[in-house]
Image (cartoon, rainbow, N blue to C red; front, top):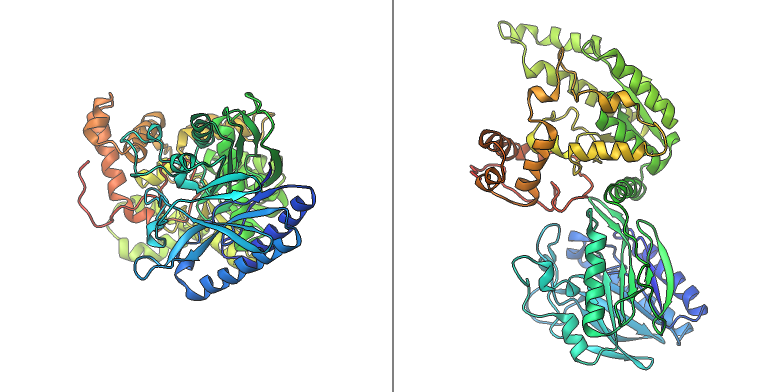
Length: 549
């Protein structure tokens, strides 16, 4: 059997556009002799559609779009079409929708297999919208028996969960036991560093365990915080790969399941290379899908803004990125020179707006009210807020998307200024720890010096007062990032982290900073998820709380 894996990039809510892409891809594959064309999970609506699913008119339009796609199969009765869409649940109580895989051929629906396992961890909240499948069925198709699952249905493998299986049934094993000769999973599996290797091992394990070919088709593209890396797979019954989809790009390829796989076909991207590609794709799609053509970045001469500018230039082209450097008397001459040099190397336009006069005007206006009080972080934050206002002015006047440049380490401990350096429409590095920012800089410079060496070598500093460096306030970044990884991503307690060898006073101080800065993160721009636990939709912590880890 020849199956076409249609790894495409849908736009959430664009029923007409997504339906048109599915129809044209189906027709081209049918004319080329494919037996079955397979699209990702909820492809028709895009994933995740969130509360669009609660709008009755949207569900009605989705049903009409499903009917349209089914009708398009009449013209090519020898080819089947398998795609994902929400469907009304035919039950008198409970959630009104199913997350469904729809198999159509010859103008009619052969099977609607609903998703059985509905994840409610990390970024997922599917029981908010969907009811689980009441049954799990196979379907006869062109001399084979198909066993169709949806994303999480393939993940109830004890080896994936340290605490054991999350669910009481394993849909893949059930389908194999009911005679499925070909296993198929349609998916919208978000990226994090190392995820493609986990998926590869998972799907290969199913193919080997059950001795059947397995086709896995994943969404590609970015929707808000989530990046989908594609990397669809097809395996033979021995668990050898027949095809591996592109990483971070659309890919339509047809695979013959009667062929033999090639054991060395899959080569994972290196960790930093994959994070770089995810951030570039995430920014490009965010801008394209939200209607932004150009971006503006405050270029400080530091490593974070340098990496942000390089990512932006790669995502949308240097002509579509404006760098603005806003020096103060506390800014080193090297920072200004490095900023201008970086912009020139990237081919960006760069504007220089000294903010000293604006800062003096602020201080003069506030002087009567601050009389008798020593300067402190108030005056430092004024500088950051002046810069944020300037960037927002460029955004308002010219329609630029402001890219904030703060990294995960700073956001975690509150080493950032509300309405200042946190201003922006997208925070590209908000899930990138500071130590990884340096790794990204090395990746960007792998073929030559794009980011000036001086930017990488100098001690990190906000340059908001004379001689200031980050180390005055924070532990060394390798230590900080290790503690943050254990506390935020691994969910370890303070005592557990201390037991790993970190200084008790440092761990307690870092944990306290994380906990008391939830209010800042609640007001941050959305960011792109590249680790296992990002701030934002996948981490829901109370703001008004007394927490002791």
